Image 1 (tube, rainbow, N blue to C red):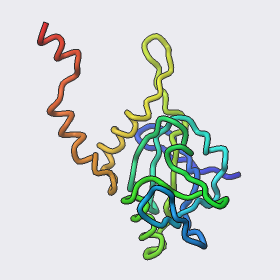
Image 2 (tube, one colour):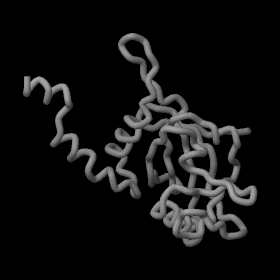
Image 3 (cartoon, one colour):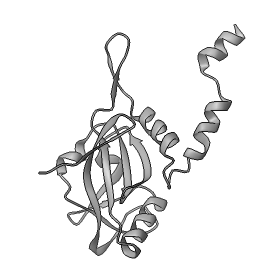
Length: 168
């Protein structure tokens, strides 16, 4: 299997699949709409990928960044009638359906390969949430509404340790 990689903000990401329209609509249980997105060239082993940061691209444009704390399968995929389909949120699913149908765009999903940093005492710590925030603030993807407030929040909030110093 040929895998594609890209570097974003100093971290390596691997392309795990490309979204395509399935032949039949899939009615996602517990959601408001019909989703027709499934994956092409998806290796099933990625379903068990641990906590990671994910990127969603429309062609070469980053449109969404997120992270999950369980497995990739728990956060992103559902299975119905042996078809895996997107299930993320209405805004992403609806957008991807629209651009695939109207523009013929390529929608791809990427996972961080090694979302870890070492602490001062040599412990590996998963920094997926940090990666999500860093990429959102620097790249400002189209569908991440949280990006609007992240920079402002950083300017107007204090670390707990500083608050504790001030009140002691």
